[in-house]
Image 1: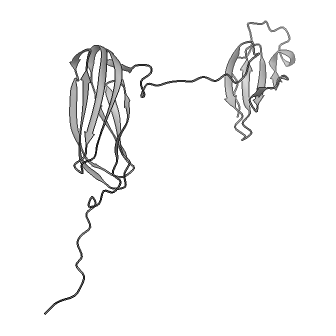
Image 2: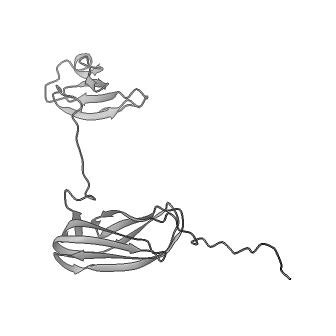
Image 3: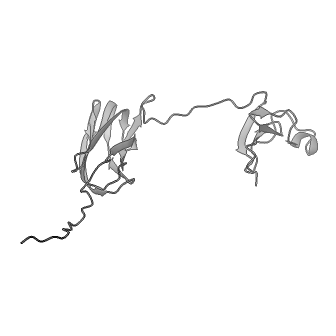
Length: 200
């Protein structure tokens, strides 16, 4: 005698990990060292062990810190940190994470320790980098740049001699939008003028 039917097995949240990705997104310095860990997969990750290790330089406090993140849901992140570091010199910061599901990731950055402060070195992938683009020339002493805020992509530039110019389509319009010198203060000297503008 045979029985027919359906057998139901309770669904486990982590039963199928087709696209599990654990990522160390960014390492930051400052007072202490932090790293952002993200689950970029489509399933929960559990019991994520992590460690931050400093190698090189003269590290008195905070050379190695480790811990566990109990659960990291899909598309969520968590910050791990060494709250206090004390040292001097160039060091390598390595962050390693490993989930119980078998996924792991490691990221390394270079930093300089200055007492309690850790500064990521220029050129490092995690270092704060600013790239400047020239958007206009021919101004005497520009003091402020602000967007029009009306959807036209125009920029207003305050020039210290008291003129406000418009940059439209990446071109500086030669006629001032507003001229404080001619309208209000005809005796204004070259060193006087506008230091900022407010667009509201």
